[in-house]
View: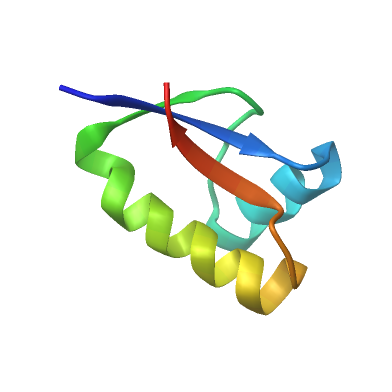
Length: 61
């Protein structure tokens, strides 16, 4: 099983992401591989359509 980590460029971006998707992630939280694909898609959508840049990253831990 792979583990991933979610990070944001700034604290306000993580707060916006959480509000947008009704999540409670904190910068540096770990994400399981079963949630990775859906979360990666949501992060891409958020980055491209809300933040207009690389605000949220999900990388292998």
